[in-house]
Length: 185
Image: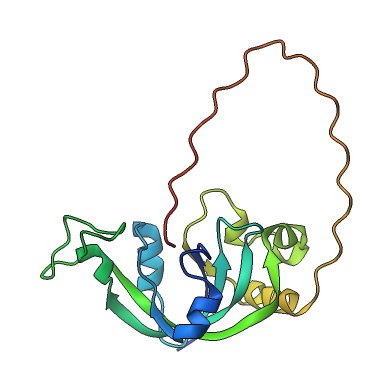
């Protein structure tokens, strides 16, 4: 069977690459997107995974994992105290499943999202597109390029240009929207 490559997101304050290194194997629970769930259902034991820290400063690929078990029932759906509880799920008819991932390594250097965007070899990577999912496929060449970048120290930041002075608005400013609800993964 051919190895597939994936990117799985997690907020580092909830579960980071360091947490995965500590526990070694973890079920990738808390995914509540049918599309992301479909990607996990397409995974096979041995598939390679980029672990991506989302909603971080900066966000980016932090290390590697490997799928070690598929078809795992996501236990968080049954726990009323969990933010991932699903009142429609039952033990007889679970709705959410996941995979177990095993820690492989941590990159010496986080591959920040801005660095990915700047790399022409990663221009078509799904994580750079709008509507990004918490679990998504990665092309083999993209996977290996991110690993390569994770071994290299990022170039120094260019000084930011000064923002032009603001003039008085001529129209009423747009109403601010509420930030999106944070999820585990």
